[in-house]
Image (cartoon, rainbow, N blue to C red; front, side, top):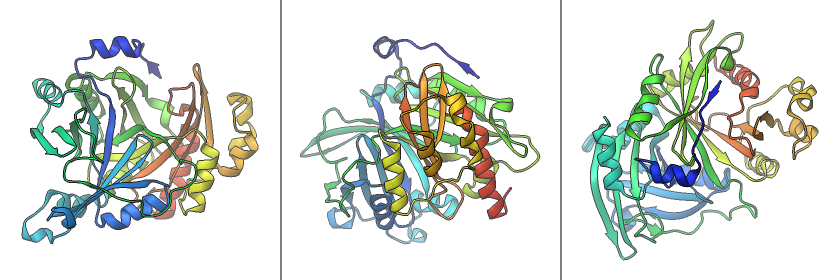
Amino acid sequence: MTQTTHQTPDTARRADPFPVKGMDAVVFAVGNAKQAAHYYSTAFGMRLVAYSGPENGSRETASYVLENGSARFVFTSVIKPATTWGHFLAEHVAEHGDGVIDLAIEVPDARAAYEYALEHGARSVAEPYELKDEYGTVVLAAIATYGTTRHTLVERSGYDGPYLPGFVAAAPMVEPPAHRTFQAVDHCVGNVELGRMNEWVEFYNKVMGFTNMKEFVGDDIATEYSALMSKVVADGTLKVKFPINEPAIAKKKSQIDEYLEFYGGAGVQHIALNTNDIVRTVRTMRAAGVQFLDTPDSYYDTLGEWVGETRVPVETLRELKILADRDEDGYLLQIFTKPVQDRPTVFFEIIERHGSMGFGKGNFKALFEAIEREQAKRGNL
């Protein structure tokens, strides 16, 4: 494992050729946006805040915007038969199933960010354009990344509406939990084809000025049966972090191979969500029907010996199947859901950080063995 040395956030922002403010939204293309929005409202404790559909002038799509703290998910589906006019969202769902189509990034200047990206090799998806309403103006542009995923560059400093022009404020579908389940998007993980990880790492280095934060190769992410390789790129302030995974040659099919097969190519594998209280979050989400990966009791028998003291007692971690890891900067607690749709593709991570900016390296073997057990149940190992 290697780790780069970073400038302080203020220095990095001044020197950054591609400054970002953070993740703006994770946008999902889904078959039924209303039902997806209801699931994430009830199971994840998110709050519906905005809507766009035929009732307010959108004749082709329906979109629901859900938030938890700074984390924003947008679920969009096509409301007319795709055969009549071939909408790219309908084609995306037909090919990949429900999944992430856009990792939107908030930037201070969308036009400058777009121009810099194209000058350094990005492929354009949408040239800069403005959307206006009574709440102000938003500037948007979009570039392509791995698979059919895109990055919309969002400049919203001159806007104070519920989401974007064309959306109206909406009341929650259900009453959110008394305590917020998570506060922010921590990182978004992409799976790419064998041999293409370094290509996409270089893409983020050149096109967005991101730096390499960590890398995991060889035995770092390997079990008896499967393996993968991963590198993490991040902006200068570490507000936007994108681990990129590729499969590695092993005895059996890795989780990355399974994802690529069922998703139909490269795409977003999982989204990690920050919480201040992982115990309360896991209890709340379990009670709402969210399924998490299981971890054998044997993992916890020696956990305290190498992780040391954590905010949550080991017996509580054992009860809830929460993983723990420690590095030179502190420790973290994390747990992973099972895939949230029938295809074994997109899943989520809940993470509570205490100093550590790592990704749970000490848990990789236990995590991937848990994933392999699920793969074996599906007949895909």
